[in-house]
Length: 604
Ligand SMILES: Nc1ncnc2c1ncn2[C@@H]1O[C@H](COP(=O)(O)OP(=O)(O)OP(=O)(O)O)[C@@H](O)[C@H]1O
Image (cartoon, rainbow, N blue to C red; front, side):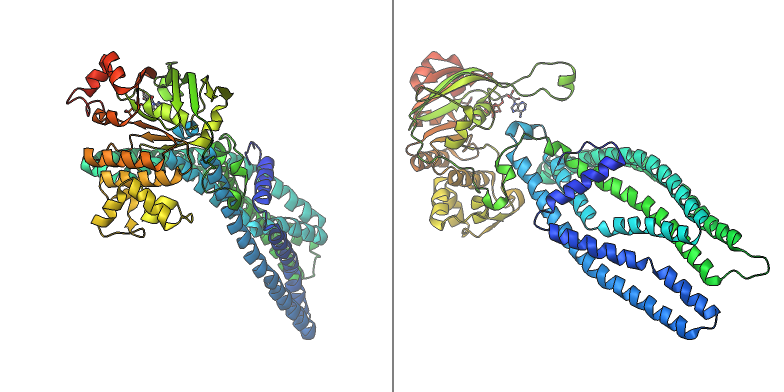
């Protein structure tokens, strides 16, 4: 539901279109709520009239008639509430439904976006956008009664006043138009400030998330003061538009209050002026009615001023999701959650024998000041050629920054290459096919605050045997035995209650489980935090868990090379050489240097 509004009319249309779209499944409730609230508001319009009649009857000493007017008034009041209450309950249900639907759709869009898109979007900012947009639409959905009240209260008093006196009706109409112009003008400026405030707010949230999520780095490196200063600067950036908003807002309220007051008294004075007959008293009930309707009119002015601002804010906040809607589309994200497979489908036991990559090119997007200065992209892959065979064990080695992780991401189908060809068993193939056969177990050890079981399965129903097999492959079973833990042992946020190596083994187990059925297994420094003995054991176990797959592991500990059939040496985004370990070692001084005692870790 992208937005492109520049006028209040468009903004209103966009929000209602979004509300209708995301209320699918609750549209009956939405219509029901609108009907109940609308009727309730309409019958409330008669209250000043009924009160006026009761007062007039009292003034004329007609107590029986006065009693009947008062009883009708009480009945109408209670009847209005009897409609309003259920209407509000329905509309709040719609609000919840809309929030669920929008949050789900936005997350689906984010999760389906290519990895390269994620590289340029901070997770904290995206989190803020999802939260802000879904909350804004839910607020809009569950506050429909305000707009209905305003609409009815706008038209109602106008009609009533026009019936009582045409001049009063026209004066009220002219007053409304003038006030609406002032409000819309000021609110446009307020919305520009709100957008600036939202942007600054997201920058703050992103930094806060970075610091809180990396508390051990912040505290360990004594960066508390520095991080606090940075947060204060980002908070100050929020205050800047906020301060301007406050001043503008006060100006707006002064204008609105003044105009509302003038309208109320103006209407009463005009009526009394017109209705006066020398020597005769003006009927109190009629003045009361005029005053009530005039006050309602003034009330609408205040309410419209407040709620238009609220509305415009919701529209701006809903618009926060714009960059997410701009993310490249995928089919999975359009499907309802229950129809989306928990894991992207792998083609188990795909029949390929060889994969040939030729002339592979990939460039990272140039961003920020480098882009402004017209600098070319650094990193990436240049004319990579590689042949992968089923059942082969390949070690990917080379100095840091050489392009190993990038190549693994392309082979996993996570980056769509900018050039080059792929052939499967000699037949030209599309790079997207890799997604169905390959699984990349990433370098990052991302542990979630959940049990061991949930960290592995993400709540999907895996048999315990499958979980235990994955834990065995990564040697995390040894950790559970040593700590008397089991599948239901809780793990703290980011795995703070685990050592670095234990975290890595837990993540590796998750990867092994997710990779079931893959015929191309890609491991990005899977064992870098393990001791040499455990590392060798884990690599051995993983290889035997995927006997028919081609396994490629990027490694820095070159003493492990004799466990692989093939060594691929990379530097500066190119494949320098590939072949059996001894042959490459003989040909490549770079590999000799990297493999020299004392050099292994330096290369990492
Ligand atoms: N998301 C990214 N955006 C921009 N440039 C990137 C990104 N990821 C990597 N690079 C750049 O691409 C080059 C290759 O990085 P890559 O991570 O593939 O190297 P690597 O061989 O895996 O290194 P290491 O052994 O240190 O993990 C580096 O110059 C790096 O700065």
